Image (tube, rainbow, N blue to C red; front, side, top):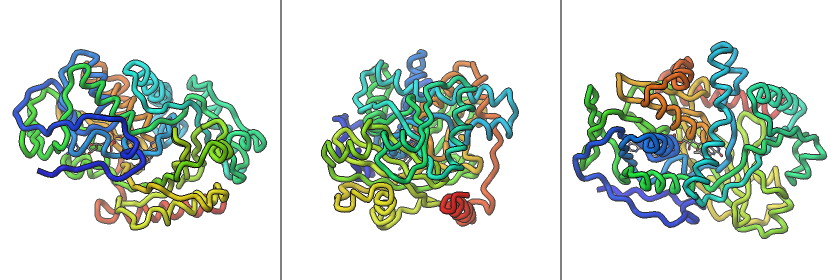
Length: 427
Ligand SMILES: Cc1cc2nc3c(=O)[nH]c(=O)nc-3n(C[C@H](O)[C@H](O)[C@H](O)COP(=O)(O)OP(=O)(O)OC[C@H]3O[C@@H](n4cnc5c(N)ncnc54)[C@H](O)[C@@H]3O)c2cc1C
């Protein structure tokens, strides 16, 4: 029986103590079988348990093995495409509902951390950093847009002010969102799994769902057991493979890479990020970074379309880090890893139902820490018969990538190359 460990990362090395959960070896019965123990699966499980459902979670590897245990840890509001784009695509009524939800994920994370006493180094404050006046103009409109949807914890930063919060010379300005922030992502997932178990839910690790028997009484099969459930929630995102072929067709796994420096010491850490906010720049192919609790810099960026693992991550990411912070040229990189997120053509999440009882949410296209927490709530509401918010997501139009599964990778890479050029020339 395969035993898949966490990939080597700073997060795995600094994870809170957690039990090794057994693989499913029986035939069990439950109300909801959740496939995948990332944030989407765990958030769904928690909301369902809080509402009286019996829940069994199947995880192919370990809790937080996927993007949820490897990401930059940045709590970023809204979706990978903003509400104005949604408004133009689906009209004001649906956009209103989606806009109201765009800031809920961060609140859910904070509620979870407080309610279940999750130790995950939660810090408030995220900065969007503009590299060009055009990007600054975009942030100004974004502030107005978000305020229109009731989000008020925002401050525009001029060039002088951004220097006070980010020790980097590249930026012309930015926007500070105090409801953004950062967390140790794997410890958040581990804390949520423990919360699931505290409410009577069961989490099986090393238990990949290998087949779903669909129908009025669906059954999920693992190599050594099965789960009979009233409902199934599919939350495997970029790691799902072809278990549900309908879901593979309109999305594409992509890799993105992260490096972590050696501890920098208080003085250098404070020179980079005096208030300990996290930062992402406004490029299409964006760089993002933050400090850890032991004062390392975690720096991420870059996308590998089709999710092949790059050979030398440090060689790809370190130059980006040095461009932002040349003062780190002699600093050692202790960890480098890659993880997969799921891209959709619209960059909006795909939410829906297959038949009467298989629900899914996937494809938040890069910004997923907050959305996945909201997704769990929205899926749980739908299972309880309140589908208005679920429908607002489910009704978003989605299209297959041009070229199908064979050619989607080169086409998407071509698109990214085009946007990369636009970033480079400030277009
Ligand atoms: C390197 C990286 C950096 C990122 N940085 C940020 C960031 O800073 N901020 C942000 O907002 N977003 C970020 N993201 C995106 C964010 O992490 C994801 O959108 C989010 O974690 C997705 O959560 P999920 O639960 O849907 O999927 P995942 O966390 O990938 O979880 C899916 C789980 O399902 C399991 N699984 C798959 N198939 C099966 C099966 N058949 N049976 C059982 N289990 C299965 C997998 O093993 C996995 O554990 C980043 C992503 C990556 C990869």
